[in-house]
Image (cartoon, each protein chain N blue to C red):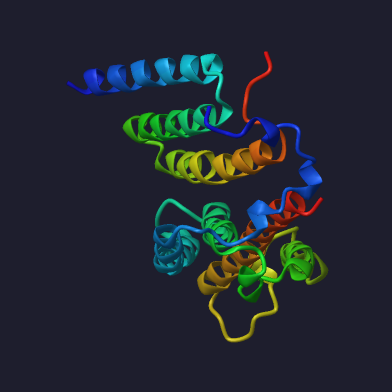
Length: 81
Length: 159
């Protein structure tokens, strides 16, 4: 049943990535990008790469989200394209 | 969505709202309680990097996340007490110097770069010499990663 877990994770990953590209509100995009990072970390755990998963969770969900939110506050919240 | 339309036209240099403390008492109290645990887990990841996943980079980012949570919730002025803005880049450069000094000390004492066997730490057997040598490297990496992230955040806020 291992492949079912990874299949579900990859499905959420692809849906999350498409959602990040499609959504108009950039704050929603940042939060969805954090979800993407967490799912990536979970996939890395299921592949046995704990260290990569740890780095992905800490950087992708912590630092990138924080800096992106600050960047949104400094510019504009709506996507222009 | 619910942002006021004039937010987009506002001069970003005049937007000081990110520097001020939050109005929500829930965010205030929660960040005060959570931050020491984030810092403690960061130190754990850093010191336990010998035996388990983790190490300098992840520990440094966790420590930076703790400080940045305080910066974001309590305001920049309050969180100066835990890490002043003027000290961040200097201490980050100090971390680079610790890394470089450890490596070059081994070079000047007859070994290769980062060859911990030649470090001038007295009274240690070779395996413990390597143990504390890699710990010195981790100290440098942790300080540099953590303080560079805090410096980037402060630089983003200050215009």
